[in-house]
Length: 177
Image 1 (cartoon, rainbow, N blue to C red):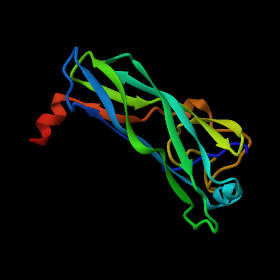
Image 2 (cartoon, rainbow, N blue to C red; image 1 turned 30 degrees about the vertical axis):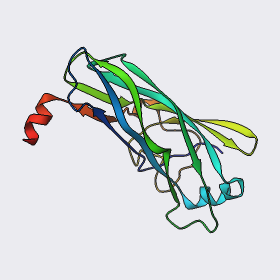
Image 3 (cartoon, rainbow, N blue to C red; image 1 turned 180 degrees about the vertical axis):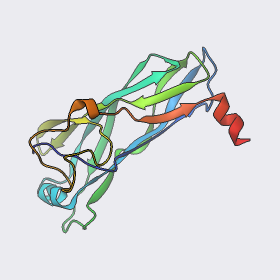
């Protein structure tokens, strides 16, 4: 399959309770990744549909323990019907938002980042294929103008990011009042 870059991959998550107290437990709530398989790639995979598997990765936290929370066991299944629409196939990993935890707050200021690295293990028919994913900002050089990019290799790892997916802070709650 080679290297592929997907723009506009979005991770949603929250923290519950919204402002955890130091020494108390909290959960990363509503965790879900939304992405789009471009039309060309989806058309090529349509004959193998449905495509299912699981996602593993790490939530990296400050103000909490453990500092790294495993993200695992998140199942997905994508049904690709022909003809594939021009915008491609949009799907969610996992299919329903999930909670990760419990974690223990060491502060009321908690930041949760999605690690730059994740793995999608895809089951197609009777075989399994691990796709190692690295997060980069949208439109990282080499991902334009083709969508998706199929190049000689992925962009330099020095450009990889660990996006913030959830924040908890007394300051944020006070600002909403």
